[in-house]
Image (cartoon, rainbow, N blue to C red; front, side, top):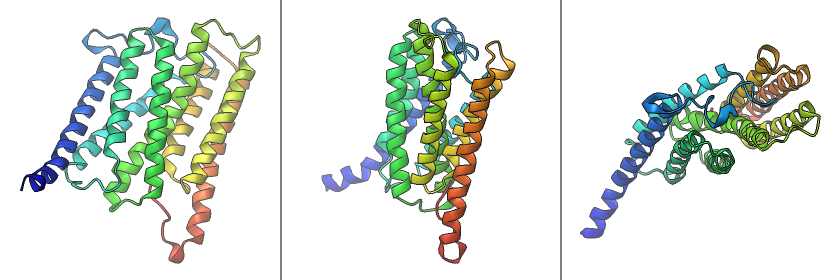
Length: 270
């Protein structure tokens, strides 16, 4: 009897833990915009994460994507109360991503930029693990495809770009100026980001969500380098080209697989 009761209680424990982790993440995001006495991220750590701090910093408008991501995470948190079995075994990884998100904000608020790099790399690794699991297991419903696959695809693509910007900020804080050629260092990183985006497209069978947020971040790097205080035509052109390559490449992969699917059925969510 006890083992049966324990098995029945496990889903509820998971659901509560996910909900608490989301609330922690949400409070962290509120602190990150300057509420509760916190310093806005753009002003924290001596302004190293501001839009004009490095060649890889996206314009301030880019961060509006967090609203979409947080709404998606909230929808997942509500939805998982109806997902009794967690058949795709995502909950532990999702909890880790939520807590790492909050930890990153607190670390940046404390001015520990290099530690923030370690945290965001860990977050990126967790999101990559979630993406692998999503690709290898199909969603049960259209709602699950949108709320789970869509949300965490967006989350992954954006954090990939944020990691580039975070590393660049840490290097700038350490006095690294690109050995006299900061634009070409930025171009090199953007080439890597493009390859990552195309790799996600191929592995994810043309999933649109990661490409959308990755392309969004790249586009805003281009905007920042043409309209902000730190201008760079070279970086802007490369960022714009990277955005086009990632988005068009993903659509091409998706279109090719759709043509190969029987009876034109969609080949995958998000």
